[in-house]
Image 1: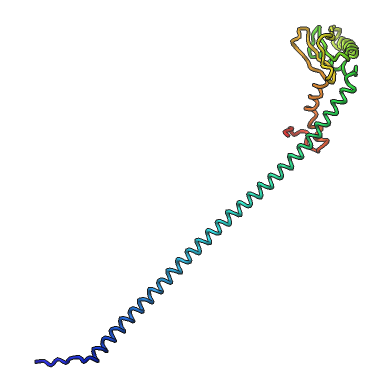
Image 2 (image 1 turned 90 degrees about the horizontal axis):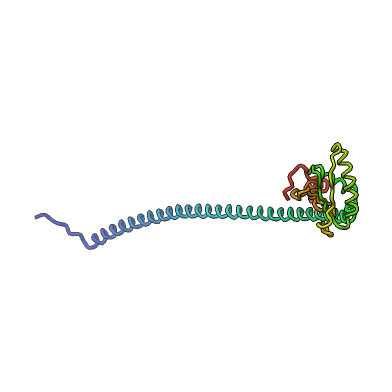
Length: 228
């Protein structure tokens, strides 16, 4: 029979302690590894979150900065447009005032100028080039218009190598007494009408002379098309 040495209780206890210590050490190392791994992953995730949040803040700042710039541009443009409109309005008021004063001047003076009326009648005679024309004027201008018509007939005959023209002042249809005066010239059939009233001529002057007036008053290029 072989002799089997039995372990004493102290030996068994010592062995258990060694095994327990070994298991505990392995557990501690495993826990340390897990802790280090967790710290590493936390650091990586934290860096990702920081980068993501930084990028979001940068993007938000850029967006707000762009919006602020656009808002500033819109405000500046709005103010510039308002200023431009005020300037244009003031210019137009001045121009309207000038032509209004010119119209008042016509009412006071040129309605009775025989030389001016003669020129307007001649213009109609040359344009129509007919044997008879009819003039219409204000009733109060009858006398000066008839004198101007006689002078125009004479000059027309001279310039047209003896061609006669009959000029009749209409005593039924008149220009309004409230108008600035002048005349309308109609051919014998009444189908062709030339408006040479002072009101109409002032309108034409306002259109034709406006670029020069603007250049004189405001220093603008008179060759530029008027678009205001």
